Amino acid sequence: MAETPDNSNHTPPPEMPGGQAAVLPAYALGIVDDDERAAVDAWLAANPSQHRELASFQAVVDHLLLVADEREPAIDLRGRVLTAAAGVSAAASRPPTPRPAPLAWHRRPAPWAAMAAALLVAALGLGAWSAVLRGQLAEQRSATQQLQGQLVASQAQIALLQAQPRVTIYTVSGTSDAPNATGEVVFVPQQQAAFLTIANLPAVAPDRAYQVWFIQDGQPVSAGLLPTAPHQAAARLQADLSRYQALAVSLEPLGGSPRPTGPIMVQAPLTAGNA
Amino acid sequence: MAAAGSEANQDDSAPAGSNPPVTTQRATDAAIDAALLARLQQHDMRALEEFYDRYSRLAYGLAYRILGDATAAEDVVQEAFVNVWRQAPSYDPRRGAVRTWLLSIVHHRAIDVVRSRANRQFDVQIDLVEQRLSVADTWQTVAGNVEREAIRRAVAALPAEQQRTIELAYFGGYSQPEIAAAMGVPLSTVKGRIRMAMHKLRALLQGTEAWASA
Image (cartoon, rainbow over all chains, first blue to last red; front, side, top):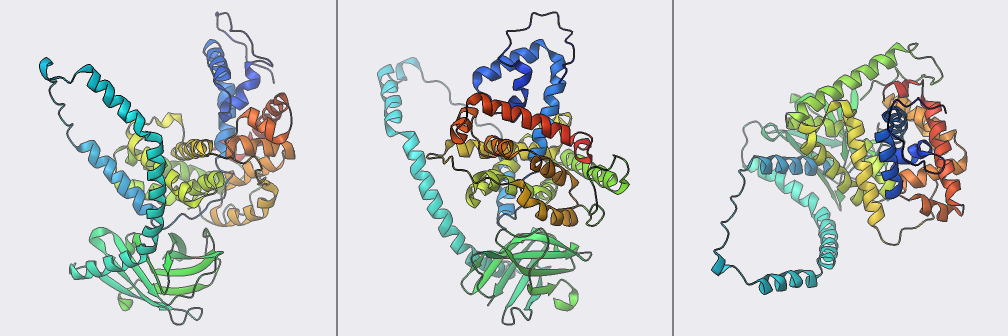
């Protein structure tokens, strides 16, 4: 491919085998080694006209980001993201902690004590400690997921007990595919949240998952996958239910679907007549 | 979500401008994203909710594609959204679309996780794009996503060795020497395949509606 003439008066750095231009695709992919990257950086600095060529390969890489299939994450991920973001905002708004005044010279720890402390920290093996914590975190995460259904159901009860004057409760009814399923959707407008609890849903096969949908203007909008536990399914939905006309749960392939493909198991009109 | 049906019959070989509904939809998508970014930069939490609802499946799909583990993928996605939230005020929109920014963070972080894993296996299942083209029909109907269809067709047009090289490099997190070892070819061959694959992808994508939206 013909290269745009370079208008720089600088002496170009030594060419790499095949030329730095030949490395641009790999550079855009981010798979060059440090030496190659440094050489390309220097070459681009000396040949600014090549930035356009690089940008064209970076555009290809941007498109590769779209190759993967969409997948539905766990329904609670949304809440986790929002909670973490709220924490970032809260931390950013806190005033900085004042730094303590330095110790007077006669009260400073002896240099040997500071060195011993540093050695002790290193000896603790921070890397091993981190690995142990990660293992514990994984175990706790599994246990947490099992308790999630019970927690959500409890939260729904708490919301009721708090006697929010605008709490609305919708009845969830099973369809012919889940005739014994019953449940409730408790909408708490002040929290912009809804608590969905369903009992007696059929057990889900390992390659299937229940997926929650809101119906908006006749179109299904995914609200995520529905965690299930024996005899009960529950989820906290961060949503303004006043925007939707109905809620439904369908049986989908593991990982969810962008549109409903399986049978509707339960449904709940989000209307005054069902409240 | 893009309106279903309006892009169901799009042909990537059609000249740009002959499909007004697609162009209009893409302009709408770009406007929505620009408005979302502006609100994210003001730390509007509702904007983050909408941003998550709009791109969580895409982000999670990319993370899962790279990591193959739901929990790890969720962690990466959470990090990415929080990073966008944290850095939005200082993000220059001229650097690129907010969707690309988010997915780039997901990709980089997921690759970091892959590279930090011990006992990485070189026997990577080739995710041949041809097998996914039938699913892409559903995508077009449901999401009207001409961009994804275009890149998938372009990747499917590559020779198998170049496809696998790109897969290992971009979704596997392997270095060029590692790819050479995995494929049993010289390093120079790997570099050549990457170069040819990227040149061909660029040629196939340029002039398509997908390229115009980049």
